[in-house]
Length: 342
Image (cartoon, rainbow, N blue to C red; front, side, top):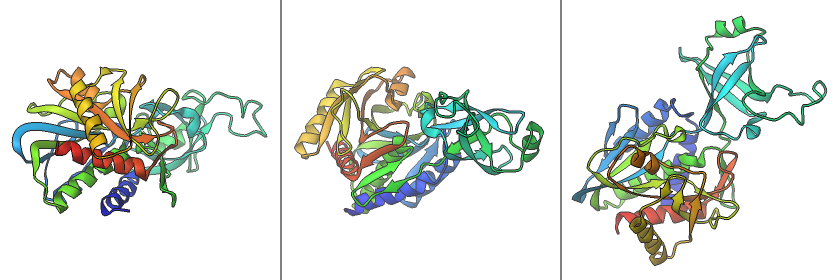
């Protein structure tokens, strides 16, 4: 395994341990900002908390790479009379996959409580519909690991409506090279971009174009990169590549997205990425994602005058218990390096 890949995987383990559902990303942004500054890069924060790292280039024509640090999650919708928590989604988690998952509740006065996400019919010995009840936000709740028997007991803990709930990523890297975890979308891409930054630093690479590395905090809810620095002419979003019916991508590939729900990506950029993948003998796939949007989509909808494209490591079971392979990570990393030197 290359040093670059080791760096990416080690960083991935670190940021997976920092809870960051959309709207609750201050800790992972602080970690990422510190990491970039330790490398010697200049950083800035947008008003809504996006991290922007500026890397000088030989040309002032500004390009950008982006990934998002925010993840799926939940929030306290209300407190039930029995002391369990009714929930609402943050982003689009597949709710049946959360049945039985451990979680953390973050209060506004900085307390953290643990709990379990369960069905409202959680026991086969008690509930006739324990196996058949549909799992959704109306039929599931959070059981808090405290002695609570009423809404009043929960309020005394400091838990209230609007508190964030984060669930465990359960990150595992297998000896066979698979990376299994929630939130590979998109913390894996964040780690890859930091691997690129570390590679630039270690090899003292001079980029052709001034390049922003941008990390957004609201991608999962649709407006992550709606605002960007005005001198950017081109953005490459690094997110997950989808795997499934009618798609070519595998966990071993870098995916190049030609079109998603927001429409086609820039044809010249897509053509360039395909050419670079071929020239560097990378394993890649070109696909169309009908139920997908990216930070480039948000930038275009925000009225920015940019070209945009989207790539990412092939990820199976998106928004559930996701999985990729180190081969897909390496192909994505190499395509980004090729893009920066095109």
